[in-house]
Image (cartoon, rainbow, N blue to C red; front, side, top):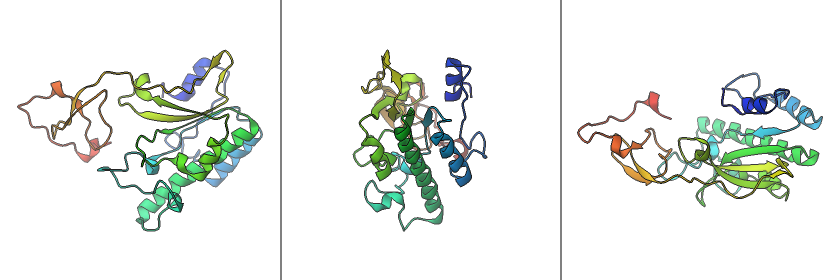
Length: 238
């Protein structure tokens, strides 16, 4: 993708070698696979990997799994964070894979701390007190105990995202003495406007459309009051 992180790095330094571990790009580079993971960690320990960015899947830790959204698959506290006993087979597999990748990410971050090699980790910012996040896992708490790790909130709308998309970043050895990275949050600075869900006419005043449900809200003024808008088909759901 032309807006990918890999292309951004190459634009900064064409001599850089960038490896992308993403099953959407290549199924052979699946960090859930033991062989792939062992090779990755071996390269990290040998310092073949000089810096890394981690964005593990967060669907089972999603902040949208609350209220009227999908029901949480894991609790915020206690041993159930690693898997509940009463889930369906399909949900157990989702939790198994999501937790495996989260724990492997934490393992890699701890290795970076030992080696003093830079990393960036990103995951959705837990907006509500009861929101679930992989940073609540014990292994991530060990990473957060290191005073060298910088925690920063960045709202991705500041960089053109369609929604506010509040994001939690863990930064280690990122920046330079001439360009220090600040821990100050980079919050949404856009003015609110009226948004409406076409099929229900539900309206809210927000800077951006909200990202829950199967239908994108649109600017209220774009809706024709004489038109009935059908709900989206499942193929248009997100």
